[in-house]
Amino acid sequence: AKMGKMQLLGVAVVILAVYCVNAKIYFREEFLDGDEWRSRWVNSKHKSDYGEWKLTAGNFYGDAEKDKGLQTSQDARFYATSAHFEAFSNEGKPLVIQFTVKHEQKIDCGGGYVKVFPADLDQTDMHGDSSYYIMFGPDICGYSTKKVHVIFNYKGKNHLIKKEIKMTSCKLLNPNMLYAFFQDDELTHLYTLILNPDQTYEVKIDNEKVESGTLEDDWDFLPPKKIKDPEAKKPEDWDDRPKIDDVDDKKPEDWDKPENIPDPDAKKPEDWEEDMDGEWEPPMIPNPEYKGEWKPKQIDNPNYKGVWVHPEIDNPEYSPDSNIYKFDNIGVLGLDLWQVKSGTIFDNFLICDDVKEAEAIGKETWGVTKEPEKKMKQEQDDAKRKEEEAKVKEQETNEEGEEEEEEEEEEEEEEETKDEMEEALSDTEDEESVPKDEL
Image: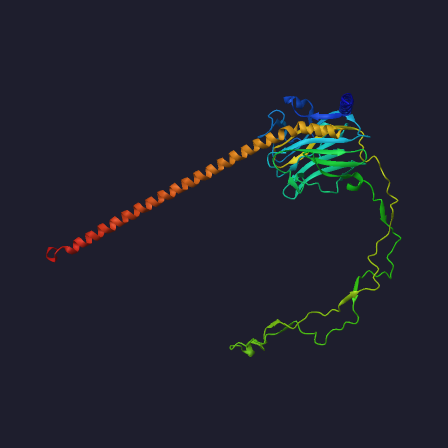
């Protein structure tokens, strides 16, 4: 029995080793070699005023070296840079695109997405209209736009996903509670797109699935499978009224009453002159006996046939395509975006063909540094809050001191005024006490 367990373990190790060997990493960038990244990334020269990138871990981080990434450094600028890798096709295998984004500047409006381009892209001329295969990642602008883009190019046209992917992650805190939180904070978050050869996809944030489905259902790549039969028409005798008027219902004879009547309590003003003011008429008031427009009661329609459904037929223009997912010449990953307030840090780029491998790499990068980063950010926030509280307290103390000084000055002035009045009163009394013959 012991030997059997050992053999099974050995087989498992071999399978795992083969599995890891078979995982193909096409592109991985974590900026761990200082300024050498500049030899791998090419800045576009399509515009002369693109924003500058700098390598930094930012103001807070989990690891000062491992968390270094490319940061936007100038406000209200376009940014355009890209990295080339050996071209490949994702035919017959999964395609995984993964990276981290940190909006430490508390972004108000700007992109945090990546674009995957064909290998023949002229990197020095990359710009917003350059043809790409895939655009994926978060986009924020004000309170209304906080979503994750998933855009695929199919036959020369960019197709946006029909669903709206919110920037949320969900955690099961206990069997009865699902907790969702928005990922538009200032911390680092991991974004993953999985594209499968069976034409399904999955989007993950922080290694948690937030959306999934099929390419054909969630994008308008193809014409609809079914269309309304242009030859079909609703029969003229088709009655789709569920209720009809009761022909036996009659309007009561006393139903009709005016909506407004003269106010019976109104009196003609005593100074009313008909020669000057015309004939006096009392003001109108709502009639309490008014019942509104009479309508016969409704009864079930005995001829009701239900809602007529337009028959559908196969769309002659529809043709299935099992290769929507396939891109033949993947070879460049680029950052082509606009930011109003700069400060976003991009890191941990990964393009591979294995979902498990991507998840493992996400755990060993973002997964290791996320909690220390959060702790450092919290400590900074706490220190800032305490500093602000101390400033407020100092200001209040100064204001109290100024008020006390003002009160003391007012008291002194009152004392001086009182003394002066007493002195003047004393002088007056002295003058009155002098005998008249001495005056």
